[in-house]
Picture 1 (cartoon, rainbow over the protein chains, first blue to last red):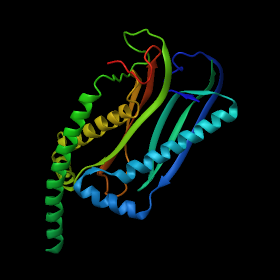
Picture 2: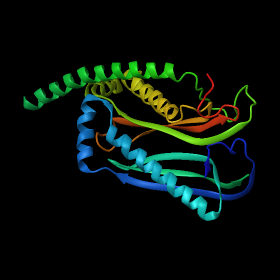
Picture 3: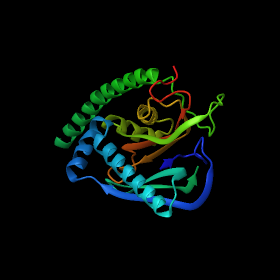
Picture 4: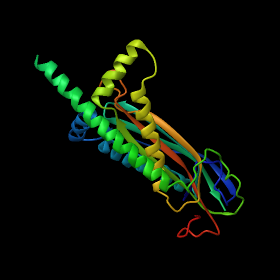
Length: 104
Length: 157
């Protein structure tokens, strides 16, 4: 599966277009992580727990999007965009969308 | 009295550790940026000044969540009252963005160029502490390209 965030896959030509495909996840960490993040908020610096959380959910969303494209019979996704929104404190929604195409 | 003591302790802890952490982070960012200077990232959709055929392209991303310390949050709160630039948040966002781009580059060290780099910022723990930022997440994503003549093992110097 070729994925890119420009209008085409460099070095390939698009033959068929299948339309929008997307994947999303909403995730939260367990309370321990939230407490730890709260403490870390006093000292400042990277919140590793949240970085990990968002990384996992982004991978999950990408996997879901790719599965959807595969179901349509596409072999590439172009013009991919990410968006993040916080639904509640400690939970985040990751949304990934793009256009499923066939390339040669 | 007790709450005042706790407040002062938090303030001092935030100031000392925040300053140390920021200095350390900036040093690490600078060292890594120098190492990765050969891998250009552009916001253009086509490679600039190089028409060699592209062999392989892939989506790459890097992200980081960084929070401000307690002292800077208080400082920013005061600034909010008087108006003006909030420098403590400027450095926070600068650090987060540079770190995210560095992580993106580190995930594809053998690429030749990164096209269409996009940087997105979101505050993830808004609900916790009123309307203060607290912590931000920065996501950088783009398309890494590998030229045909350069095999992935030997990248362009």
